[in-house]
Length: 96
Image (cartoon, rainbow, N blue to C red; front, side, top):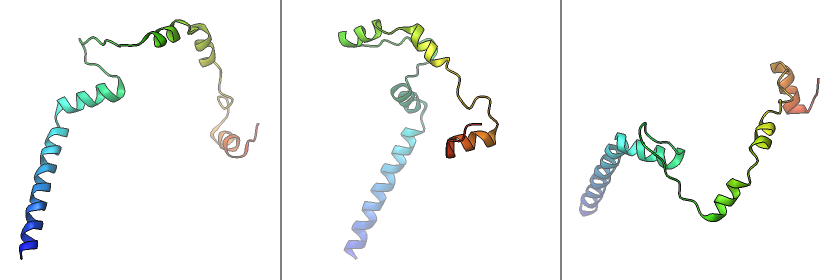
């Protein structure tokens, strides 16, 4: 009987802590904090400040944006293919 009471109390405490966690997770403040931390988001009207060290600054200075843009402009080999040809290309390496 004593074990059942201990287990009941433990489960009740666990349920209460889960309720508190759920209440916290469902708030706008929690969602806002998670989005800012994991997805680099900011709210309208806010300003973002990025703290970087000297090594990161030198890496950003040496970026050649024209090359990066040109690399992104490369057309995909599957751009003009229909769906069936794309499957053949990806699965079997078939080139039409």
